[in-house]
Image (cartoon, rainbow over the protein chains, first blue to last red):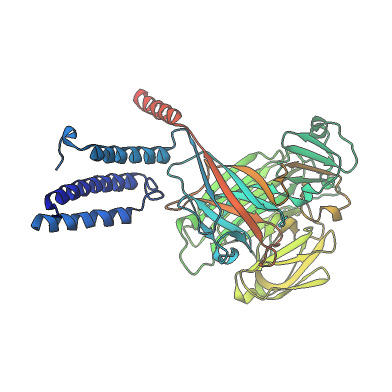
Length: 63
Length: 476
């Protein structure tokens, strides 16, 4: 089965944007009102997913 | 980067909508539009909202549960917004039947808490006939009063009454025979550390006359809070008649209190100050006492005497040089380490305390005096020595007994938060107080759950308040 790089890039592109928007939204909310996100969502984990998608984005674009 | 909404696939739309929904849910949880937030905790590590259970040496950290082995314990409540009051509900194992109170820190400079009762074994086991009026209860050794109104209109003498969580609303009119006012100032021996509450008798035509001189013995510079000194004078009817605040900006600061009194009356002088501040006290009064606690500081070669009516005396020092043996009546009490509370049960109604030099804090349920005729015009607070006092015939309390099943007891207390101190990053500080030094690793207090229900203004009230504020700003 041939691996579809374009589909993979498209999927990663979406997750990169989705995670980035979420990250900015949560960080801004947390900065305005401490305790907004921190008790419920692990922002470090969210950041890790976003960084992974950013690295994948670079790798896939170069491919 | 963004494609049009129509071009997105269904699962992508769902994920975007999901992100918005999650953010909206978090927004709801953060602003609490209904004005109510409930947080619970049942382990020592706490949660984001109920955290910092300390100090660590007073909690059995190995079990993970909320097991108190020393007192008092503290924790912080960190909501995302301010609230007006907190209803604290604590569930604990019935095996630990200890006097339990919960409180909130209102004044950090002087470590003052507003506390409310949760459990009082003395009152739980008091089987005298009682009169109830809501949460107010009056126990009578022999039935004398038929109603609360009857009791308020015709109260018993203070020596026959014990109170618990109850502000005595009645003015006390002491009659002291052969009282002679002094014309000259007399300086009290030694210095007197930190916050104190003086009860002073002022004769007819005499003036309440006190002179306070404050200095600091701290090696480190004082913070702004620690420099602040507040002096409040309460009149015979318990209303505040004078209040002054001053700061220890120079090496020493003096304050003179002169209040004329036409009739014989009892005044209360409340001094709020850091324990790093020492006062030299001078007065024209000869009948006075310190309520609940006193912290005298005497030079090493000075032999001192004090008298007290407390049933159990607690002594503590923070100075290694003040570790000494003091005499309490016919007993001796050895203070051999700092920051440790030493308890001794007194044998007589009035007990003499003697020592040589030192910097020792004494506390207990009663008063401390420099005269053997201890002046205490107020009803005493209910404590575990109630049964031993044959004079007490009436007990009045604002107290609701905890509800207990076979294993667990549960009680609630409502605390005001409007004046509570807010510690940046940590929130409100709460205290769990167990009186009498009864907790240890062998007899701990096992708390099953702490629930904090915070109640404040709802969204509409907050908007209304903001609009009113804006309107006032615009119209002025």
